[in-house]
Image 1: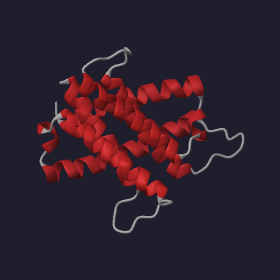
Image 2: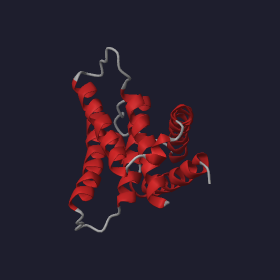
Image 3: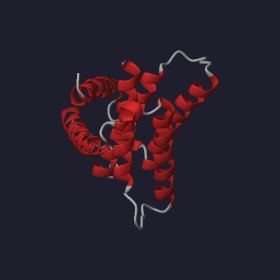
Image 4: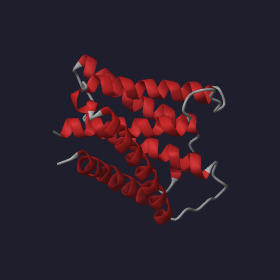
Length: 178
């Protein structure tokens, strides 16, 4: 299998879970502000790092499921960036949200393909712990940008960081499955 196929396989699992939770909870996540989403991603990445270091797990939730959560929360953050703050009693069609989800995934995958070409699939040789550290670094960057009210001087904005987090989490999921 090539990277595109492996990427699509991981995203398919993420999308299935997103769609199922959309049926269960609706778009209740629309209430979350970007810093709250960034913190959710941090919680998941921090748990993965902690489990890598202590080698003991008390809750029966896999690391793969945490990467799926990182991917979906990052996509939700990109959706929030596009839709802005929710209106009171806002009702969004599930099909419309899934369409936006797919567009965000397409953009992240396009970025991955371009970077993957230029970096010659270096991620395949990286340690899983390094990928987790890179995700955590991107989260720290997001927090700083959020603290700066979204202003950056020479750096990429929040959307670029969420896209990178998606791609690193997909890479980690691929590595864990192989």
